[in-house]
Amino acid sequence: MKVFSASTLPALLTAGLLLGGCTSLSQPSAPAAPVTPPSAIEEPEVDTPVTYGRFQQDTLYELLTAEIAGQRNRFDLALDNYLRQARSTRDAGISERALRVAEFLGNEPAALEMARLWVEVAPQDPEALRSAAIHLARTGRHEQAMDMMQRALELHGETHFDFLALAAADTDATTRNALLDSLERMTQRFPDNTQLVFARALLLQQADRSAEALALLEDHPHTDDAPPAILLHSRLVAEQDSEEAAEILYHGLEKFPDDTRLRLMLARTLVSEGDFEAARVQYEKLARDNPDEPDLQLSLGLIELELGHASDAVIHLQNTLQLAPGNNTARYHLGNAYLEADRPEDALLTWQSVDNGTELLTSRVQMARLLLEQGRPAALQAQLQQDRDQHPQHGLALFQIEIEALLPNHPELAIQQANAALQAYPNDSNLLYSRAMLHEMLGNPRGLEEDLGNIIAREPDNAMALNALGYTLADRNERLDEALALIKRAAALDPNDPAIQDSLGWVYYRLGELDRAEALLRDAYAAYPDQEVAAHLGEVLWRQGKEREARKIWREALEHSPDSQLIPATRDRLEAE
Image 1 (spheres, rainbow, N blue to C red):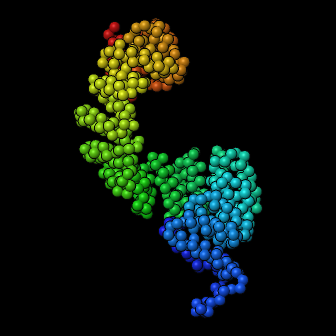
Image 2: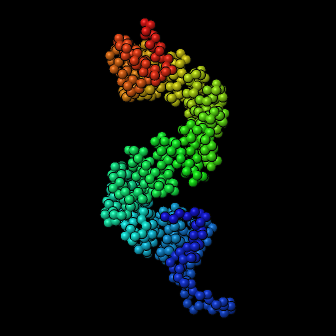
Image 3: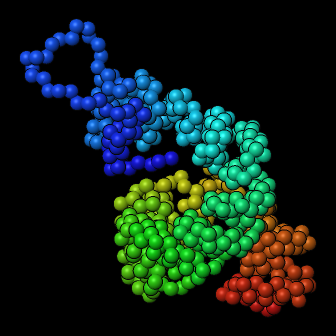
């Protein structure tokens, strides 16, 4: 299908009308009439319309008016005139011209009407049949589209069965199966038509029958003589073997070295394999061939970051922003590249310039981490307050970022911000939960119980709050019956959560039911070998006289969490008893 730009369409309209685009205007023109003085002009006796070729004067006038409207970018007026004259004259050339203008304007109803009219007046024209098939498919008339395409195929015209298959992507299974049956019958008549095979494979893939699609393509290896089929073949193979998929794409590029789609698919496949060096080679070739494409510069920047080449990443990401100044994804990763290149202040300034989108929040997480590493909590708080003023729609998320960042080493500042956040968002359970954890860190058990109790009162099925309150009571060895009831409620709501299994095992340990505690803690540790679960399981085993196994579990956990303070403290306490 031809695609016209706004700048070329007027010239195309002119060429089509004046140089024979319409069949009737291609007739030899009449000789020029002799110039007659005004006084010699006589009124005709009968009011007979003047015709030029097979067109009346009014028709020609409207067609010329349409051409002038197109030259002046009034394609809506041009289309109105063409539609009116196509319906009136039923001329194949005018019908095609009206179709092309309708396609340019995205007027699908008009395009379909003109495509059908074109077929009516030129039933042996393969291009008319193909155009009608495409527009019928776009409007969901898949069987009629298939019939048109088959007629085009029989006339040895250009066909686009792949387009029909893509247009059927969202159809129901019955329609898709009917199309598959039609394509299979046509393949038997035209076994050498690779588009038929490719279209069948596409439909099979859409129907989640990838194995059948792959078998079909591999039974017809000549289908790989076209880039779209190579792409589909590689995509199907990649579901089982991405390395083999890359080989298919390499071979495809030997046949079609200038095909951008194949090279881009290869580059992405190599990235998915983790072969960043090879992917970089492909992206560099794409970037050289497409120097104004920002996404390619962005991809190169991300690959250089993965390879640890921070300075090269900075160059490519800066290039991305020169081509697409509003690309906040590039800006966010440029900040990361600056940080890797040991340019922290440039990183902060770059992240600070991210002012919308999801990257706004991720950049603030990075800024928070870096500012706290630099020992600048006040700068962090000032920045996030400024962000809340400028982006009130992200106020809650920005509070949460600040609280989470301050919580490990600045709990006093964190709880101040949690209090401020809860004044602005008093019903947010996540804020209440964060403040509850801060109360625990600051040694305020009453505050912890109050916040968790408020969550449970509002949300009786909040498994996280039920488990946290129950575990806190069990860990303090207080109100164990209440702790057990709370954790059992949490387990009923989320029976597969290893954190809840750990809490349940721990409360049973506190209640003296060591065998039940051991079973639950083993399951929790198998699902989630966390240092806290390891400490609990080791303590239960120790109490059962299984000191050797307890030490083994603690050693394993320390290999994964060498900075753990809980495991050495548990071990030292038990050994000292």
